[in-house]
Image 1 (tube, rainbow, N blue to C red):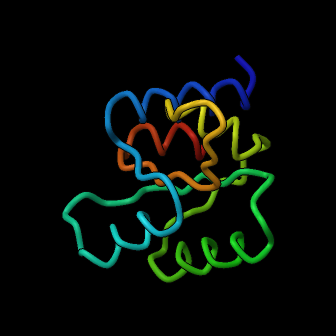
Image 2 (spheres, rainbow, N blue to C red):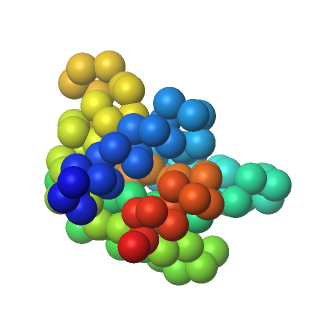
Image 3 (cartoon, rainbow, N blue to C red):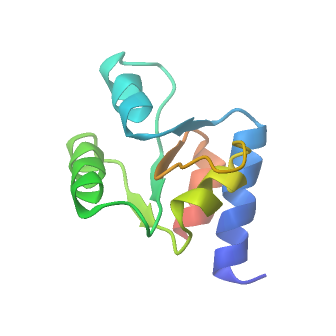
Length: 105
């Protein structure tokens, strides 16, 4: 399986398991609430704006969370996490250590 197909499968599995937080504001809120559930990696889409990319990279840096820049668009990322058609998801936080480790290989 290619690396990209593997990444798609992992993000999809994490979403089905309820181990994702989708979008900048929800991810930021997750960090702010000092949740006991750790964010292990953040996946971003290629179609997000430069400003959004800077914000999510800064957030990841502040919390020492690695960022994986996907080659998928925001619409494809939304589909991967099971969002309705025409939804846009520019970033997804993975909350499962094993799935995150698979993405970071």
